[in-house]
Length: 336
Ligand code: NAD
Ligand code: UDP
Ligand code: UDP
Image (cartoon, rainbow, N blue to C red):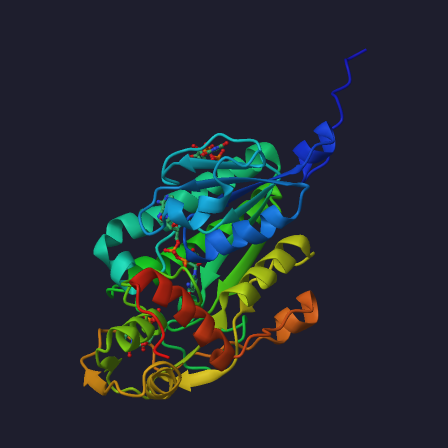
């Protein structure tokens, strides 16, 4: 009689079920803007243990200050392009610079992070039977020819442009996710994140909302890149984190758009920041960078139907919360 193999451990959530312990969650890129807010939310649940891995390229320990030393929290300096051995139940894979000035700074590294980094996290998910969520991006739609963008749209992306390291990197990351799902049965989730803003954004990362708020507080002109009629849709970070957790906990692989469908031209955004924060600053038109998408707005029908999710925070309510954080960090107090 051949000895029978032990039954497979229940998968996913293998470790927590087997050891009757807490849910162990890995957040890559957890020292960054969205990642650190996600960690705050996950740590609220006393059944969660959170492990962050980050190479601090654009993130900072400061964002996780309140959790350092906490018994349910661990912070590891690690680059996801190198293999990682940890035992976890869930992986939120965020590690990747998100701002154009940072991802264009070392484009080859950006591609490696997206491709090799995602491959490593999928290899890890396969070994331990964890569920893995990738934070993809609306940039997979490129300069979209369909508006607003549903998940079924395949996009209009330049494969050899200066943004391609990011756009095409995320497209390959999505492909890898689906291939590991089909080939190895890995439980995957893909979020296509649209522009997100809120406290803890890098002050000088060149993204439009952080630029305008910092400029308004420093009394500098708001730099609207030409033509100024290009549009974006801005989601407040707490809404984003809520959407990511719902996606992870739900039954759908995605890809699912998570973003706020409120659409603004960059000129409108500048006018709003000027009105709310500093009516004295001027608005200055400046040159744009190549391949800037002309319009972007999520179709969030799927998120509403499948996750019961929709954004709650309006731009006019979110901007002052970010202003407050930027004032503290820039040391600019409010005039009475
Ligand atoms: P962020 O730059 O603040 O955070 C990214 C984090 O990843 C940083 O802490 C950085 O140090 C870390 N990191 C980068 N490369 C790494 C590597 N090789 N190994 C380990 N850590 C690494 O950006 P964010 O806005 O918080 O974005 C988080 C995720 O969401 C990214 O995957 C990004 O592509 C995606 N996303 C963000 C937006 C947005 O508007 N913020 C939009 C679409 C998609
Ligand atoms: N990997 C990792 N941690 C693990 C398991 C795998 O970082 O716990 C990496 C591994 O180094 C490899 C990648 O994930 O580069 C893909 O692993 P997989 O087992 O799918 O492929 P293989 O090692 O067979 O190429
Ligand atoms: N932009 C701008 N002024 C700035 C920075 C950006 O007008 O100081 C514009 C940029 O041309 C783009 C939009 O704002 O059309 C959003 O740029 P961002 O870099 O924030 O994010 P993207 O959506 O391009 O990744």
